[in-house]
Image (cartoon, rainbow, N blue to C red; front, side, top):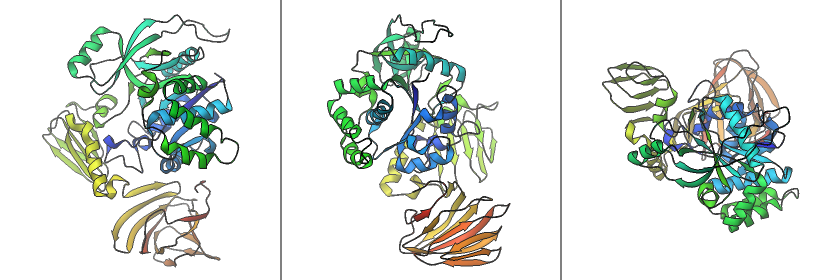
Length: 481
């Protein structure tokens, strides 16, 4: 599979998983199913087939940094940064011109960063088969065989079976994979229509996973979305000239915001579907936990510090505080440090409406958690007021923050446990428990934990502007700007 590339779409915000997901910590960065985050699972799942130097991640500037912390094996130059969100057609087109530029014969598998797939071997086999079909010039979409009448997914109606033999080596079996021409894509149905689709046997869930040659998808964009194609070609013409970032920043925001389904897949005559049974779930809302998590004898999914009595068929999640529930039925309860969600299960898809209201109010709870993970450790916002902010900072053993300064704030550090090694201007000194130090505005400084236990300190910030973007970095071992 020397010409196969993986393109991981990781720009989504996962609003229906609020309050666990936030704008700065979207769903793909969460540990929803097991010990690894969803994007870590995605990379690990495809890696046996696609080496990491051929895995590209499409995301935005704000998400690129936390993603790099979680998947350091993906090199920085393999991140494709969208200047603004423009839906999947523009994002996929941007990835396609990069791959086509490097390898005109490249086949790209477009995968979501936030799906759960149980049957990993079947997944790899499906990608192999789809790749062989894509080499023949088809646009392949992976359709999931429905296991129930589901109203939360779009469907694909399959037509005639294709007689295609995948292009495999002489040492591999050359059995023809099963593929069908696509008659149509249909929107999320009502329950009666969904039942009819399942009974018909010719409908598949639209997984949003695709496989095609980069050159072919660009040709089809050129046929059906001429303005998008022209914009992509303008960006491609800047490659290797040192102007790629500026040209992308100029052109990309002007592109139409439209999904690849509407832009190309519903119009092209080259679309085929490869059916698959992958144990797949797109984890679209809190009710997805019913499908991917273990349930107790009463049908509940319970996680964290929870005491429940007599609840049934409910989802109860607690981060740190004790959450006590009594006699719930078909209810979702999610408690985090700074926000709590309570809703009926049948309204779980509408959690995005709450996020929209939080955005209208300018609420910080939409954007970030009180505790924010960093590559060196974490910080927790304890209190915030006019001209001051108080944080608890934890630095992992052997870790250190960037060499930095702030234009608008000063900082006062009080060490609670561990020992801090501090650089302040040209000074380098140690601060022990119950000791403190002061960092004035516009003073270069660095905090480091040289010890073997976590360093914990309280930071008091003072100034006119106290947001995280008031950081000027001079040196950073984690590659941040």
